[in-house]
Length: 108
Picture (cartoon, one colour):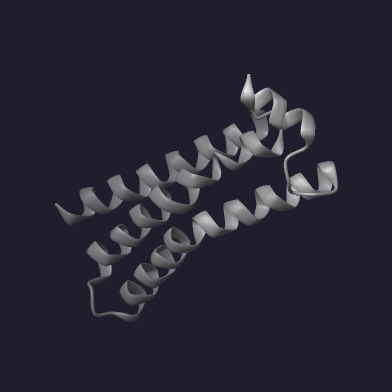
């Protein structure tokens, strides 16, 4: 029974990763691409960590490492996406602040 659960979690994580890669390849700009990093750094690592956790057990070295890696990816995902979006904005416009024409668009 545990083998079925482990393989199900591995398949789930793999399918999520493949779909995120396809989304990255098909997205038009860097800001759209950033949306596809979310599931790849939250759902998939948690599924893989759960698979290792179920297969190896919670007190093994592999179980602890997989949980720590998944937690690190989940916790740092928001900060990394924000930093990447900010860097893309600075590269595109030379500054991260709103341009005057963008402020007018937001007001109308």
